[in-house]
Image (cartoon, rainbow, N blue to C red; front, side, top):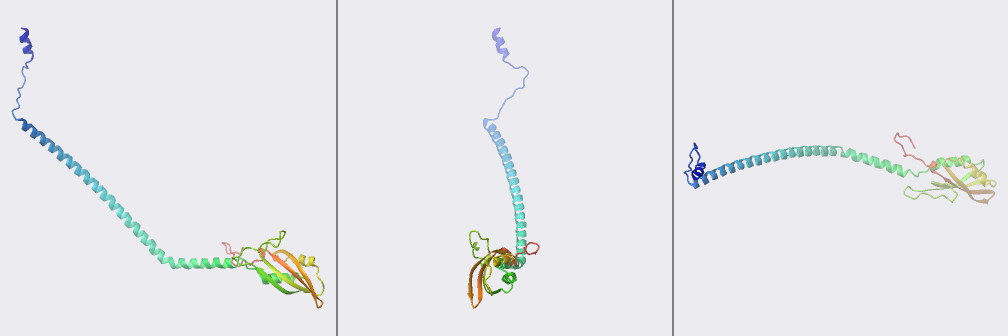
Length: 224
């Protein structure tokens, strides 16, 4: 009884019988077809992705080419405008250069005529200027050093020989020159006498107030 029970436990009652009658080669061919279909699907997907990438790259390249063409057109327009106004710019530069040159050239110019008139007016009655020697620096030269350790800065020097019927008080002569425009300092150098006339040599140093400043203009056009 026990042996029969064991055999009966392995049976399936009411099941649908199945039998695979095709050879194993048929199953392999079916599996190969499925693999080919999957490969075709993957290939199509790759082609779609490649096409999308190519289209995006083409779009980006077209946009870059368009931007480049626009930039080139703007550059050409600027070049044309620059050529149009190049002559005016050159003329303006030349005018500016001339103005700067004039300003530099006159930067050390002393108003000698006005200075001489002021000196002549400051002298006592009966005293005359016999001769005068002017000394100033050129714009490209070094500034003049003071005449001594206790002397004032100077931009030019005027040496005059004055004549008088009597010997002059040197201190009084120097004091009379203080009101000369641009006065820095003055010294009597020597006194000589000939034929009843006394000649006194005086050296007068002047500062920047004696300069003409002809071309030194500020932004409003007023003289500095």
